[in-house]
Image 1 (spheres, one colour):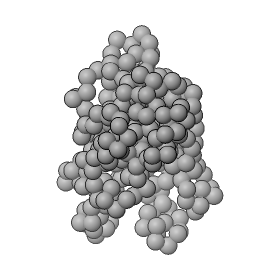
Image 2: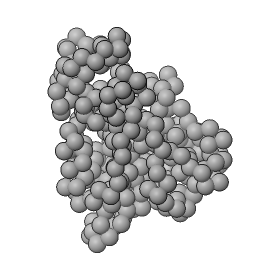
Image 3: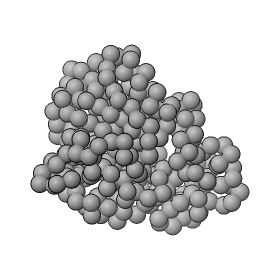
Length: 261
């Protein structure tokens, strides 16, 4: 099975169904961003701290696996030069629809967050990468590509799942509101779902997910050459798990000024 194609179709379907992460920014939010009051998220609930974003005017920003008309239009409205790379044409179309509606310029590229040779090296000041690497099977290539396309001194702001969220049987969680431990980390829908459920997921175009180790998520960035300069945790907006532990993480990572690549 081609994972990239399957999850592309899954997110096209989620966009058509108006999933919460496909609903675009409102004109009111755009107006606030133009006035310098921008609020975007890497994780479900906490806005990115203002010092992490800094002055966006003229800044070259890559929204990595971040289509859907939420982050990119707001960044463009705040004065950034924005490029969006996403696997889903429907999500990218939403970015363009908002850009047209608001008179903004956004460059959109359909591609794989693990490997995007169509983007040249040392190009961006900032990468915004909200929770989405749960839809790829290997996260370390993503960090290497992010490092490559950032200018020296550039920063990567990334959100991702605490892998502990994948310990629990997802259908019992969703359908019966019960937390039953059945998974192991690293997690893979392809390996840990029952054959019958996996066939159903493929037929219904449900997105396939992967729970990466914290070593791959955090040390993976450090091993590429990044310095982690910021960190916070966030809740999931699900009271069942939020009563026990924050299940989402955000990191701020800097590429050294002296980096030759």
